[in-house]
Image 1 (cartoon, helix red, strand yellow):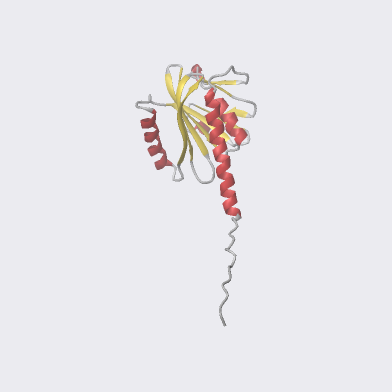
Image 2: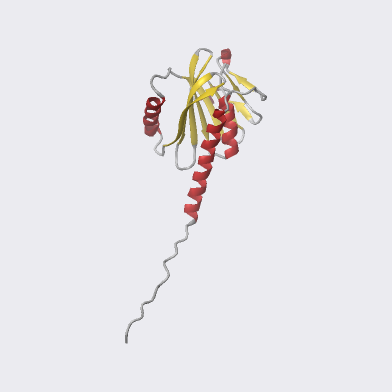
Length: 188
């Protein structure tokens, strides 16, 4: 008796729920990074929302409805901090040294520093943007696999240089857009 070759169907592998969840999370993170970067493209716009003014008029930043300033020990060394009422985003501002070097050199140095601080560090975007207060270095990265996105902005205001950190938990696109719009208003 001779054997008849049979073509067996290839094993069909269906993506598991974990894979789909990971892809969805990465998609939201990409949208969040894109939302923040797109808002910096347009440059300063007239402010039509309430504005937070730092002590001594050191800087100003838009503070839309639903955001509030933190005070006392909750500042954790920052000059000022704002948070959304739902806890999905926080912006902290502290003095920073002036930047030296090209955008690429500054990005590499910042990436090296952040890799040491955040084990899940993954860069998303680095560029120079024009904010209300002038040109700024903007660096956005994924802090951890849980989906925390952070943008570090080094920007001038009132004759000083400031580091503005925007931290987004869960990175919902609308929260990223709102936070990006706030960062674009930073200045004197």
